[in-house]
Image (cartoon, rainbow, N blue to C red; front, side):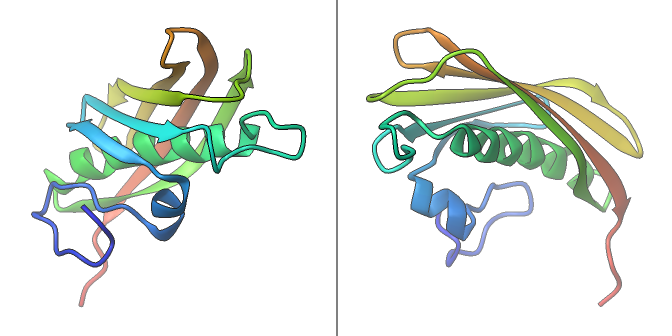
Length: 138
Protein backbone atom coordinates (compact mmCIF):
# COMPACT_ATOMS: atom_id res chain seq x y z
CA UNK A 1 0.00 0.00 0.00
CA UNK A 2 1.35 3.42 -0.88
CA UNK A 3 1.01 6.77 0.89
CA UNK A 4 -1.63 7.89 -1.61
CA UNK A 5 -4.04 5.00 -0.92
CA UNK A 6 -6.66 5.18 1.83
CA UNK A 7 -6.09 2.35 4.34
CA UNK A 8 -8.48 0.42 6.53
CA UNK A 9 -8.04 1.62 10.14
CA UNK A 10 -5.53 -1.13 10.94
CA UNK A 11 -3.65 -1.27 7.65
CA UNK A 12 -0.10 0.03 7.37
CA UNK A 13 0.49 2.95 5.04
CA UNK A 14 4.04 3.48 3.79
CA UNK A 15 5.48 6.93 4.35
CA UNK A 16 7.64 8.76 1.82
CA UNK A 17 10.89 7.50 3.36
CA UNK A 18 9.60 3.90 3.43
CA UNK A 19 8.73 4.13 -0.26
CA UNK A 20 12.14 5.62 -1.13
CA UNK A 21 13.86 2.81 0.79
CA UNK A 22 11.83 0.16 -1.08
CA UNK A 23 10.11 -1.25 2.01
CA UNK A 24 7.49 -3.96 1.49
CA UNK A 25 5.19 -5.04 4.34
CA UNK A 26 4.63 -8.80 4.49
CA UNK A 27 2.76 -9.25 7.76
CA UNK A 28 1.04 -6.88 10.18
CA UNK A 29 -0.47 -7.11 13.64
CA UNK A 30 0.14 -5.43 17.00
CA UNK A 31 2.14 -8.47 18.08
CA UNK A 32 4.25 -8.79 14.93
CA UNK A 33 5.10 -6.78 11.82
CA UNK A 34 7.39 -8.15 9.11
CA UNK A 35 8.81 -6.09 6.24
CA UNK A 36 11.63 -6.34 3.71
CA UNK A 37 13.97 -3.77 2.21
CA UNK A 38 16.58 -4.06 -0.56
CA UNK A 39 20.20 -3.30 0.26
CA UNK A 40 20.60 -1.62 -3.14
CA UNK A 41 19.66 2.03 -2.85
CA UNK A 42 20.25 2.00 0.91
CA UNK A 43 24.07 1.86 1.00
CA UNK A 44 26.48 4.37 2.49
CA UNK A 45 29.61 5.68 0.75
CA UNK A 46 31.70 2.56 1.48
CA UNK A 47 29.14 0.34 -0.28
CA UNK A 48 27.70 -1.14 2.93
CA UNK A 49 24.06 -1.11 3.97
CA UNK A 50 23.67 2.19 5.83
CA UNK A 51 23.18 1.78 9.58
CA UNK A 52 20.67 4.63 9.51
CA UNK A 53 18.62 2.73 6.94
CA UNK A 54 18.47 -0.25 9.29
CA UNK A 55 17.41 2.00 12.18
CA UNK A 56 14.76 3.70 10.01
CA UNK A 57 13.41 0.30 8.96
CA UNK A 58 13.41 -0.94 12.55
CA UNK A 59 11.66 2.17 13.81
CA UNK A 60 9.07 1.90 11.05
CA UNK A 61 8.05 -1.70 11.73
CA UNK A 62 8.02 -1.22 15.50
CA UNK A 63 5.96 1.96 15.19
CA UNK A 64 3.51 0.32 12.79
CA UNK A 65 2.88 -2.45 15.32
CA UNK A 66 2.33 0.18 18.03
CA UNK A 67 -0.07 2.12 15.78
CA UNK A 68 -2.11 -1.03 15.18
CA UNK A 69 -2.30 -1.69 18.93
CA UNK A 70 -3.16 1.96 19.69
CA UNK A 71 -5.96 1.93 17.11
CA UNK A 72 -7.77 -0.78 19.11
CA UNK A 73 -8.19 1.80 21.91
CA UNK A 74 -8.89 4.85 19.75
CA UNK A 75 -5.38 6.16 20.42
CA UNK A 76 -2.31 7.07 18.39
CA UNK A 77 1.29 6.00 18.96
CA UNK A 78 4.29 8.31 19.09
CA UNK A 79 7.88 7.15 19.44
CA UNK A 80 9.71 8.08 22.62
CA UNK A 81 12.83 5.90 22.41
CA UNK A 82 14.68 3.89 19.80
CA UNK A 83 18.05 2.20 20.11
CA UNK A 84 19.96 -0.11 17.85
CA UNK A 85 22.91 -2.44 17.99
CA UNK A 86 24.59 -3.08 14.65
CA UNK A 87 26.06 -6.58 14.50
CA UNK A 88 27.07 -6.80 10.83
CA UNK A 89 26.41 -5.11 7.53
CA UNK A 90 25.77 -6.26 3.98
CA UNK A 91 26.54 -5.12 0.46
CA UNK A 92 23.72 -6.78 -1.49
CA UNK A 93 20.47 -8.69 -1.34
CA UNK A 94 17.43 -8.03 0.83
CA UNK A 95 16.95 -7.59 4.55
CA UNK A 96 13.94 -8.62 6.61
CA UNK A 97 12.80 -6.77 9.72
CA UNK A 98 10.59 -8.56 12.23
CA UNK A 99 9.07 -6.51 15.05
CA UNK A 100 7.88 -8.59 18.00
CA UNK A 101 5.92 -7.15 20.90
CA UNK A 102 7.64 -7.14 24.27
CA UNK A 103 4.88 -5.14 26.00
CA UNK A 104 1.49 -3.95 24.72
CA UNK A 105 0.12 -1.68 27.42
CA UNK A 106 -2.54 1.01 27.69
CA UNK A 107 -0.01 3.85 27.58
CA UNK A 108 3.25 2.31 26.30
CA UNK A 109 4.34 -0.36 23.85
CA UNK A 110 7.76 -1.86 23.43
CA UNK A 111 8.87 -3.91 20.42
CA UNK A 112 12.10 -5.69 19.62
CA UNK A 113 13.03 -5.65 15.94
CA UNK A 114 15.37 -8.23 14.47
CA UNK A 115 16.88 -7.24 11.12
CA UNK A 116 18.36 -10.14 9.19
CA UNK A 117 19.91 -10.56 5.77
CA UNK A 118 18.05 -12.88 3.42
CA UNK A 119 20.70 -15.54 4.21
CA UNK A 120 19.63 -15.50 7.89
CA UNK A 121 22.58 -13.47 9.24
CA UNK A 122 21.55 -11.10 12.04
CA UNK A 123 22.53 -7.58 11.05
CA UNK A 124 20.89 -5.35 13.65
CA UNK A 125 18.73 -5.46 16.76
CA UNK A 126 16.44 -2.48 17.41
CA UNK A 127 14.23 -1.76 20.41
CA UNK A 128 11.51 0.86 20.16
CA UNK A 129 9.16 2.27 22.78
CA UNK A 130 6.02 4.17 21.79
CA UNK A 131 3.72 6.30 23.94
CA UNK A 132 0.01 5.79 23.32
CA UNK A 133 -1.97 9.01 23.54
CA UNK A 134 -5.52 10.04 22.90
CA UNK A 135 -6.30 10.77 19.29
CA UNK A 136 -6.42 14.55 18.72
CA UNK A 137 -9.91 15.98 18.31
CA UNK A 138 -10.90 17.09 14.84
